[in-house]
Amino acid sequence: VPEGEEEETTDPQKFKPPPWLTEPYAILRVHVREFYRLQRARIRATQQFDWLKRWYPTVRDDRLATILQYGKDQRRLEEAKTRLVGGELKGFPIWTEWLESIRGVGPILAGNILGECGPAERFEKVSAYWRYWGGAVVDGRSEIAQEGVKRHFSRHLKVARWKLGNSFVMVQGPYREWFVQRKRKEAARAGKL
Figure 1 (cartoon, rainbow, N blue to C red):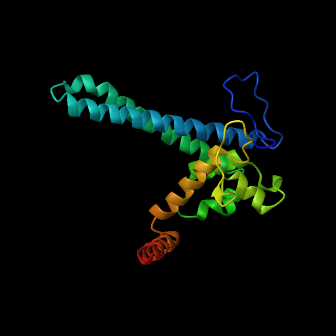
Figure 2: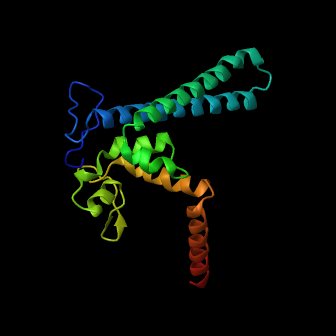
Figure 3: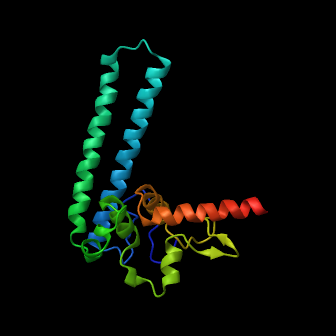
């Protein structure tokens, strides 16, 4: 676990937040993590619904209605959580003055990044910031979590980094074109080997 980072625990009595995790960042963190829990539950319910319809086509629709309604209720909760996060972000100048205008970065993704990372000023160098995001290369390989070895990155931020890149590719913005050109170069290079 990185210095100043908390140990993952389900016991609130044992949790002691790091000094940088001030109330505004903690609130974002909790809202976003809860959003992702709601989203996973909705996706699971939808998959179960599809599975039931596929394998038991004779099941009555009224028996499936509760599962379908659960998915709709979950979606509404996700939307409400997104609005809450958006309201919390108004207190962060980095959101109002920059992130909000970037195509592909919405309130949940921005809240995820800010809530998990905290203030960027806490990092002495850009390389430390990048390492905390899970982007460090050690001995030619991407850093991974190993049992018994201190982790120098946030697993939540490592996932957020992937989501950010994926979002940029999906929105068909300028990053999409860069991604496509890069993939063409890699494919051409692989064909020459």
